[in-house]
Length: 85
Image (cartoon, rainbow, N blue to C red):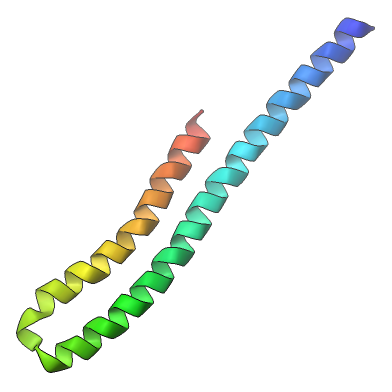
């Protein structure tokens, strides 16, 4: 009886661990996407305002927006790492 209980406890621990990995992966993507959305919103609004002042500097404004979008890509990479184990 005791070995059967031990096997059940081990199986439950492995299931709980893999479930928390997927929850962590989902949180990584969701929170990174939320942060990237806020960052792109702020940087995009500032870039459009600055574009009116100096249109010749538009490449720099696009770079600042792209840096904010990179946060979402980092979250996606972290989720791949978490779900692969």
